[in-house]
Image 1 (spheres, rainbow, N blue to C red):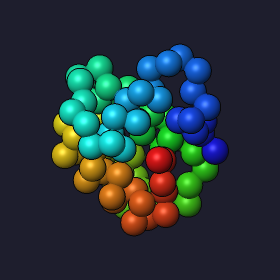
Image 2: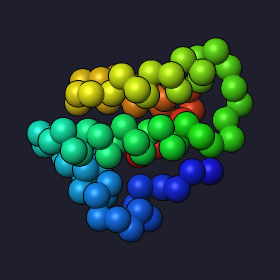
Image 3: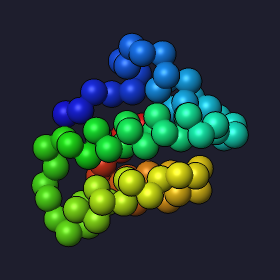
Image 4: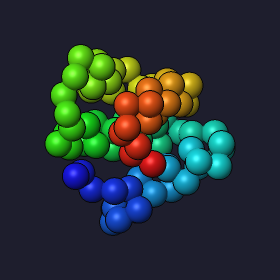
Length: 83
């Protein structure tokens, strides 16, 4: 499994995830950190299906809270919960 955000040590990702979970506005840097985290999360050992492949490709389109929310909803529906 990829590294879980709660164990990240750079001090960048955790505040971004916490702001996301609290429904706070996200800075561009926080969105970039969340996008990078989602990208590495998709490097896990998943049962590859077309939907998972599409989800993986779509990580590069995560440039807003709305896009992140949609992506996380889709991931969760597929049994992939990065948060």
